[in-house]
Image (cartoon, rainbow, N blue to C red; front, side, top):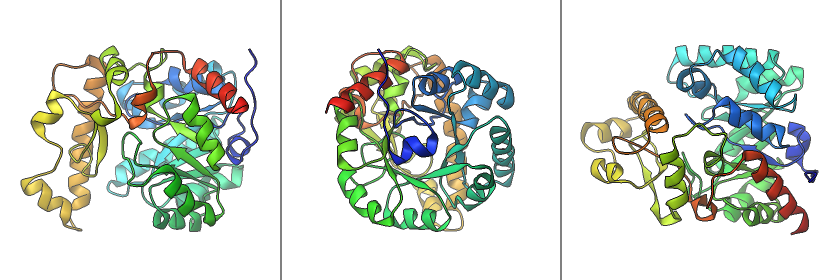
Length: 330
């Protein structure tokens, strides 16, 4: 069956058929998943850390494999702008150059000031959408020149926001930039609803982990199928700021709040970046191990409250096609 096409700011900016973003996820963004989402008419977002460190691929070679599998359809890239490590920023800058050389023109920036990304990609026709959780960050991103916003709400996985879908849209829409909804969309009805609300599209993460193309361990996928929204809790112990994960015996055992010296360091403006860097480096190893080996030891399974609508593991393309059909008849 032919996939319906849409006309929104996101489809025009990303040059795609269906306004669905397969969000960047460490370590779940393996190249096969990214390619499948793009090939189906949405857009898969490359997560360099995932491709290079979790999946041990050469970045340029992997980008070329994705382009072939996606049959030349648009692919995006996630660019983290965290300023805590010059070495990291240098690597991200090189990955950005490679992505541009391999034809990527749609970018999702996260954390920090995205101006350097906008300045780098705009001269060659690149478009940048920036992750935000509230208006003050959206205003800074707008001033930096981004062309769109990804509104991360309080139902999202990973680094969730604190505000609901409608509240965020009401705050951000007056800025005059297209807004994409990120968080809580686990079924086609939810996708159709955010389009009716006025969003330019949707970014899905958790829903794409429970796919046949995602390389996540089956324990992770089954945890998503079994979980309900009340099982998703926030923990400070992955990156130093609240991250949404599925509650487990391990999460209960270690707790969800930073304590002792870590708590003090996170509260200090001079030391909080170093503490967050330490947490992030440690959690990259834990998340990679959870993804590869499943449950039964130290594990964090990141997920959003969209788990309520996810009841089977299926191909990414089928999800996009089903969501598209539902939105056209809603």
